[in-house]
Amino acid sequence: MLLTDVDTFTSMSQSYTTTNILGIASGKGGVGKTTVAVNLALALCAQNLRVGLLDADLGLANSQILLGVNAPLNVSHVFDGTKTVADVAVETHHGLLLIPGASGNQSLANISSMEARSLIDQILESFPDLDVLLIDSAAGLSSANMSFLDACSIRLLVMQDEPASIADAYGLIKLESRKDRLKDLYLVPNRVSSEQAGKRLFDKMNLVCMKFLEEPVSYLASVLQDDLYSRATRKRETILEHHPSSLATKNITDLAAVLMTKLSQANISGPVREQV
Image (cartoon, rainbow, N blue to C red; front, side, top):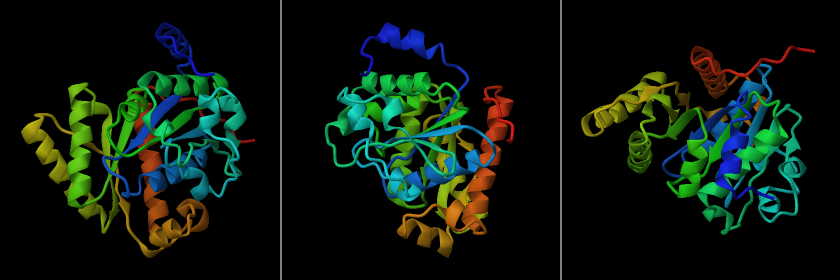
């Protein structure tokens, strides 16, 4: 059963400080956020980290489909009190711990901020050995989505070079700016034609932020579009596993490496497991 007491949540969350919580967000849907989240999680697993992935798109979850995982239980069973997080979590053959979201459940798409925070706390309590917990949040700016991002030490904003994605990404950046959190927000241009095109998209967004918010955003890396990336997405495959030599796989691997460097520089990186 999920916690409902704010003081209990606060005291418990302070007890679990070794797990880095990273959020993957987008202003709008359809920009490839979940594809980036799933493949980034696998890339971090390949770095010998103990990684968990929470599919926090609780109404239209699909991470398990991309991973090819059979997940008979999901977070809806945690919210109704019939199962625990440990019961619904699935260990994939990649070594990734998946906490599946629900699909087609409208009530879960509108959970409260406290429920979102309580779910995270249950994950940290159940799996204190996690080095990294990636939270693949739903598209949009609901209170639940923002609560998931509130728990993250680093937030990645996936966007594409098209007007609706840019406009909605700016809306999320604006909300993060009001919380004085832009220093921990990194843009990840996705499905761009080149690294230079990704950097130009970042520069465009950064210029808008400097003009209207009077503070910059940060750039992490871009993920390039290629035929294998598109094919894997259509087939509901992971690019890292099924197309390891693709350009997009290199981009995701580089993204994981840069992210690990950021964590190390911030002195918040969890322990790296020894190979056995």
